Length: 219
Image 1 (tube, rainbow, N blue to C red):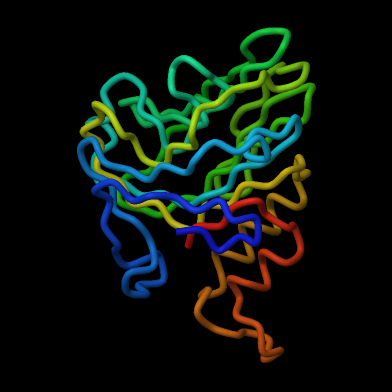
Image 2 (cartoon, one colour; image 1 turned 30 degrees about the vertical axis):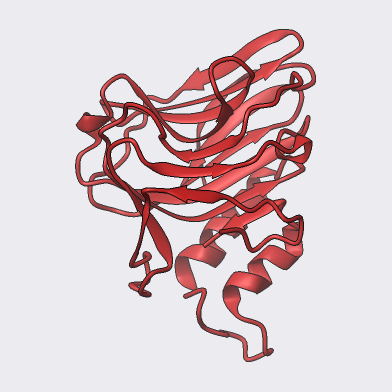
């Protein structure tokens, strides 16, 4: 399920294909109770500076209960980074470094039944999160990411009953700056990935990925 040239291919465990935010058939994944996608461990998926980007939608965030993973390299033993949602629709981003846990919680809450673009960035100093290109979290997170052997989990493999749709997941091995995050939001919000908007022979989904060289793309 990866389009990256790095070969980070995941295994689908119960998640099903669904219409994406442009209503393209079978172009995103729908996650319900206890299912998800697992990408085998690879050191390049936990860079010391990195960015995680994806689109998500849910009709009922309250079913998340306490904390539910959107995407995480964290099996609760080898913990490296997580992007999570609370039952009140606020989000948490976290990175586990050699100096300890760096995390932040948002006061912003996710809308219901609407696609929203979320981004997590860590740069060896801070961890930051954005929603539709707007910064919603910034917290200290100094040091290098700790070593670990956890797979990458998309959705939630264990107890969560949260139903959600996730589209266009991208992981980058550098910390995108605020302008790049905004550009990523506008590029993906306004252009159908199945089309070639500027008639250069390259579909929008591929064109977006060329500029920032992601380690993993799922769309």
